[in-house]
Length: 173
Image 1 (cartoon, rainbow, N blue to C red):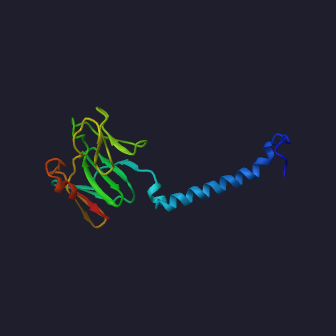
Image 2: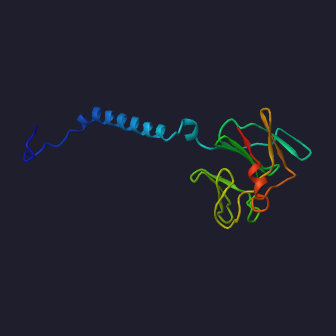
Image 3: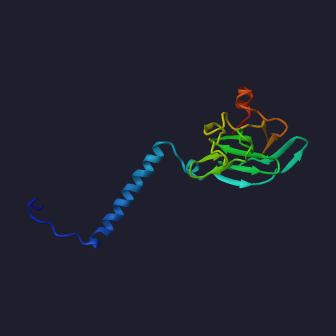
């Protein structure tokens, strides 16, 4: 033990190597413990993947898509649909912002959909967050059929006009 009045020699950086690694590993383990205690698993930490794909098939007014394997969005520009899997639910949205019919885009940094025209933002479940839009993203009725989901393209549900049907337009996994 050194006397507090005794000047300390400067530390040699070489002596910090092993201690720094140990401290890093200790801190990393602590962080992982915190993440686990919050219930966050690697599946929930994974990035929200966005892909562009067309429907597997379209019969009349119904488009069929493969069941998404993980959280993310499939954008089908041909049929103006955004298919989203988020927190064990699947939604089918109209591609367009409810404010002025501009194609929505996914913003990785904010983890939200955004209208490039007036910057309205929406959660992955379609809920309105901010901007000029005054309602959530419009949904299409959707149902599960084995390992696929079927979207009714002929019906567009607005949250402000039919809140009950809008809330029910979801496939629970």
